[in-house]
Length: 360
Image (cartoon, rainbow, N blue to C red; front, side, top):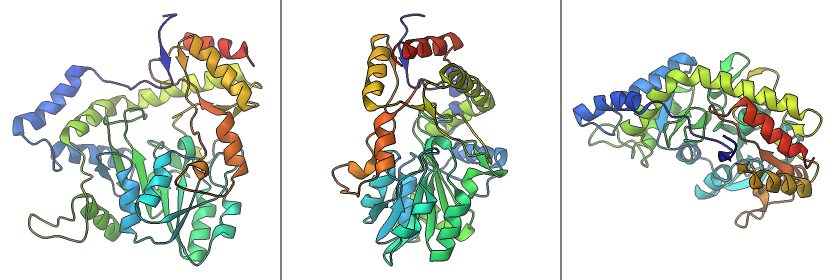
């Protein structure tokens, strides 16, 4: 419909009856949390579908970052990207460490590995890199640097559900990878997330950390918090999961339509060639912030709401006092994500593009 509000995203929802049928299994047993059968089933489905070594579902996508930092015993400085969602940086500070920003690659929007080594000092304990908009970092370069300098690696893979790199799930890389299952993500549990670690001993430690440190009912295995996902959340994930391939396919179709219609008018993110991408977002970079604001105004006037994502560059937020990051700050001022979701119609994409071209 012409006057329908078009947001940057729209949560994919299965039929209520499908959700309720799954949830009734938990309801009938009065088992609503504490890793019931729905949580275990969800973890096993994801693990099997994507050939993942270990997965631990959590109640959101931010606690996994905090738990990973705590679990790896990180201290001092953590090298990270200024171009990410704020949780990447705030988790570092929340755990008593200091974010040291390294500027991004101008085409991929990921942390530039060529600039990492010059930022390493004796106080550096890890690299926390984001696969921006689901686009894999230069994993090989990062892991080579980490091995050379004896650093831990955490990947913020919040946008990466279903992404693979060189034939393996993206979650198989780094000491720990994390994901978000937030309602705005491709795969979701309403609120939710996950932790991944190939090393069994490390994974066991992550597990204890996410469950108060419990090792049985009366024994404890170190410090912990509560990051458990509930059966209500897992039921949503199980209801969404059968649709995931259709969701990927639909988003790819719309993503490629945007690229065709806007070719030569905006800058697109360069996607890593060795990956199977999930089309999680359609970010576009305009010529200037002034042009960006003009486009947003035109779209908003027509009930279309893209998002300035990511903005601001995280080195500029008030509790960080980071160094100047010229590329990140420039891209952050000129980038936005266009509407992209399962229910979006091709005609709506063309209408969005038409209204953008009125300004470009």
